[in-house]
Amino acid sequence: MRRHTVASRRPSTRAARHEGSSEQGFTLIELIIVVAVMPIIIGALSLAFISIISLQGGASNRLSDTQDAQVVSVNFENDVQAAVELTSAAASTAPAPCGTGTQVLGIQLGNGTDISYMLVAGGAQSAQQDSMYRNVCQGTTLTSSRLISHDVPTSETAAINCVGGPCPGATTGWIAATGVIGVTFSITQAQSLSQYAFTLTAVPNASTNSTQVSKVNLPQSGCGFANPGTGTYASHLCLVDFTSWNGQQNLSGVSCASGYFGMSAIVTNTPYTMTFCMKVSSVNSAGSPITGVSGAGYNGIAAVSLPTYTSPQPPPSGDGSEAFLGNNGFYVGIPGDPALYTTTSGSTSTISINNISVIDSAGNSVAGWELVTGDAESTDTNESIAWSTNGGSALNLLWNSPASPVGNACESIAPTINTTFLQGVGTSTVKCSANSQVNKTGTVMLEAATPSSLTVTMKAAGLQAMFLGLLLS
Image 1 (spheres, rainbow, N blue to C red):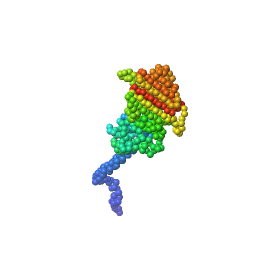
Image 2 (cartoon, rainbow, N blue to C red):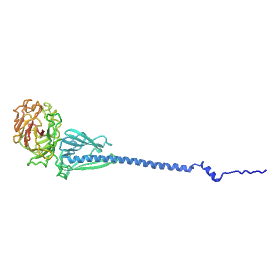
Image 3 (tube, rainbow, N blue to C red):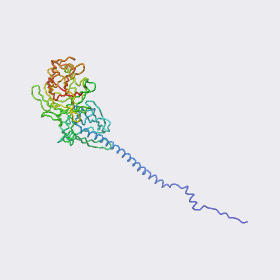
Image 4 (cartoon, rainbow, N blue to C red):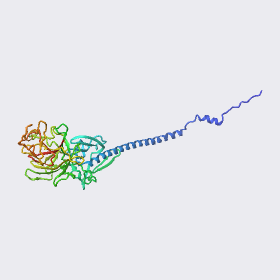
């Protein structure tokens, strides 16, 4: 019997290697290396990510700061170029700062509009930083308030410069723009992440140093209206803003005789402008001339807002009388400084106005207007005020209301006029006087058809004031 030998079959070396590989893993050394290197890689990636986030925040802050600078720049340059008067006083008067906060820069545009750049606490990243607002007022009414910059230093100031250095008086009151060679803001937003800093400089068009002065003929004042419903002619009667008189800001475009001050008043929301020349002479109670700067005015007369004073209580708490115009709901809200007010008690002032003209936007003479003038204070014991026009132009009463011509002014008892103390109505010369001091229920308002000149003489025991305006048909 043939015996078959069965050999034992062993896998090949190649097969053995293949089968063994499915059971192999990382060695201990490999694991130690991975554990050591992995934190280094993750840390590097984390640092890179954090850097990207930080750069994004810084870029965002810098873009925000740059946007602040752009917003301030656009408003600042336009406002300064249009300015006729400027101040860097924190608490300027006539007019007072527009809105709340600390004023850095005040600007008058000459049309009854006032602009204040104000610092307001809050909304900043530090107690040493404020927010800056641009406030716009029409007369005493705030019409616009806009946040234009964050994180402005609380010590921020505006530099108003004239030839030779800072303009005298700019830090304490209003100055004319004609002598200003530059207005500068230098702001560093120190509390922002970027610590962004920028400087802005602008020159008024009215400046004698501006290259545009020959192209621009800005009106020196406005002729503004009272609040609607506060007077019979509130929507047709505008009063001239005499603010520029205080700074003796003469308008070069008005031709005047020697000694006269040229003025131009644009009538708000119309194409009309009133131009005239004005001269003032005053003497004190002893008869000595009052010349030069006197109080806030010049030659014994200052431009002030309405009402000129309020003191209706009897003595000793008051003087028993108050100005009626611009008070107690009678033609209130007239912008600017429409009253020409004596600055010295007991003085006598003569205001001479000539070359009165009204033109349209093309420079053509306008017909159908009436000159309006009157008492802007109160005529009391031993006081008088007289108005005189040229060429026989009659002065007639513009009644305070349909029921009262002058109230109790000039010793009248409404509706009866006391012709002993109110003389000349209907002629070219009218005079109001008084022998008592009582709380006024009216005031003298006169109208004359297109006169070319007006002379007003005010004799004060205390103080006296007048106004000038236009009644449009």
